[in-house]
Image (cartoon, rainbow, N blue to C red; front, side):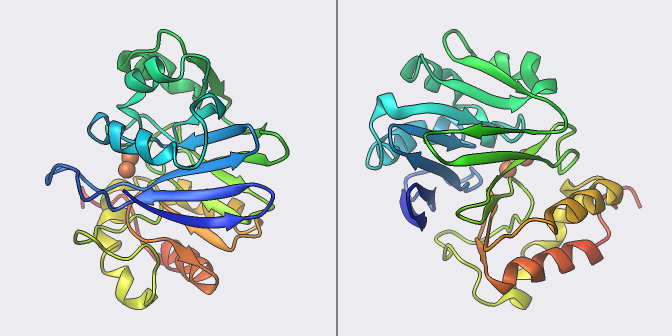
Length: 243
Ligand SMILES: [Fe+2]
Ligand SMILES: [Fe+2]
């Protein structure tokens, strides 16, 4: 599992991805970890298939008892089908996830972890000092969906928004935005169902100061590419599979 540090200040952001060990037909995913002293938040920890690789990778950056919080942006298997295994590994952790998915996510097996239901309007989570915001991203693509914003690191973890379908071993960062749009277009048109929801999210996200937009698949956007992505997404007609 490749690891990339996105922010290294009082707290740290680390991205995990490009798992060379993963089975071939499984979509590649990016996982994110915030480490803040003796507290850590693991975001969209991934599927059952990558659990052992993720656990080994995460433990290079924090102790197991310091992983106090998990986050699931939505209910998909590539996001959180590992939940039952984390439940056995981190019995004292809390899972922050959309309230509407609680009855569904419990099918992955929660016997120990506390499910903290996120209200539709979002909320905040303070680790030791880092204050993270759960930003509503409903219908992008799931009907209950959140992103995570860190105003100090100026990072928005954007779940499936910003996804690109890449060949194996692609670089972690966008280098040529125009070329990159070809790998994002069909995914966003098919998986994002609502132009109205898209515009609502764009309006909200434009008020945030973002230097890194970090999606769950594909490459990470930095600097001016964040604005380029928002402009591109705003202009894209989504939810068009039935036309
Ligand atoms: Fe998804
Ligand atoms: Fe995904």
